Structures are given as structure tokens and as C-alpha cells.
Image 1 (spheres, rainbow, N blue to C red):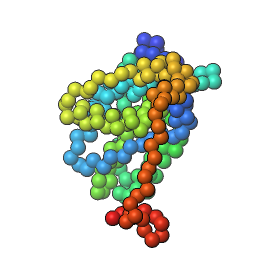
Image 2: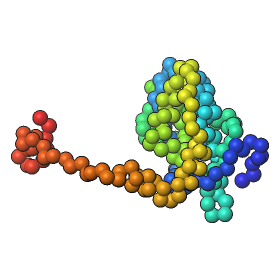
Image 3: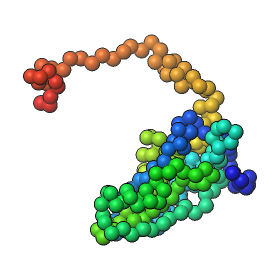
Amino acid sequence: MKMDVERISDIIPATSLQEFALSNCATFFVFNVGDRLDINKAILSWEALVAQHDVLRTLFAFHKGRFYQDILKSLPKIPHVVHTIAEDTDAALDQLLRDTGASEPLPMGSSPLKFVTVNTPQNRYLILRMSHSQYDGFSISEFWGNWGLAFDGHPLPPRRSYADFVYSSDALGEHGGYSYWKCLLSGSSMAYLTTPPADTIGTDGNSRLV
């Protein structure tokens, strides 16, 4: 992948979780937004997150047997395409995404981010394409919260750089996480669950609601 070095903020190895995610298809988040949401404002608000979170400005490349992530200083305009379909069904929406490459791994060297607006006879959907290499179960909720703040015109809270996280994890080594929890839990005792009261046990031996 050829890239102008002046555009790059940092180059770091991809984590094992990111490497696994890159071998899979993109993730599509579908929002039923109706006809009242200002979609252009929503996209501009997301671009504020891109400026704040370096993992959203990351391009991935494969070099000499492993994946790397190029963190850009800024990301070009996020693509936004508009489609109209005749049926407002999950199957029709799913087929549209499949037809636009949803079932294929993302190409290396380009941003996974993309917006799709889908108009149907009854509804309007805003779809955000991402790669699971850009988020996990914790950070995605942070993104949604920040998106709402940006949309409402509030400043975004400061965040540590994702690159700092990768460097720190790398410094701990492969067993660093295990060592941390071993030290933290040293001397602690196992918590045991007590037997539930008799009136919560059904005649079949299974727990039941009271």
C-alpha cells in the first residue's frame, strides 16, 4: 500500500483481535431514523468522533506476514451512498447490503467507514459500516454516547489514544494481562452462591420466579 508519509500519525502492529476481525466481513449498524433526522448533521457529527478517536482514522495493511495499522492525521470524507428499495423488509435490506459487498472482507488500505441511506416506502434507514477491528463491546457504547453528544453540539470528552493502548499492551507482553489479574486477585477468596430459598424451586427442580 502506497501512502503519503505526511498523512500518517503513527504505524503500529495490529493486535491479535484486530487480525481476527480483519479476516471477517464488515459490520453494518442499521438505524431506523424515519424522516425527521438530519442525516447530513448525523454524518458531520460522526466525523467529529473520527477526529477524536484515532482508531477511526486507521487504515490496515498486510506486510511481511502480519497486519499493521496506519493511523492517519485526518481521514478523507467518509463515503455516503443513497439507495431506494421497493420493500420495507429485513430480507430486502439484507439483500441490498449483500449486493453492495457486505459478505466480503474489507479491502486493505482503505477506511472501513461508510454511510448508506436506504429509502423505503415506509421508512428511512441510516446504516454505518465499520470493521470489528475498530471497536469492541465496551468502546462501541462509548462511540454511540459520543455521537449523541456531538449531534447535540456538546464537546467530546478527552480520550486516551488507541495507539497508547497498543504500546502499553505490547510493553506488558503476552502474559502481562494474566500477571495483572494474578496480582490483583492475590489473597482473595472464591465467592460461593447460596442455595435459593425453597419457595423459588419448582416441582421439576428448576428455579422459578416468585
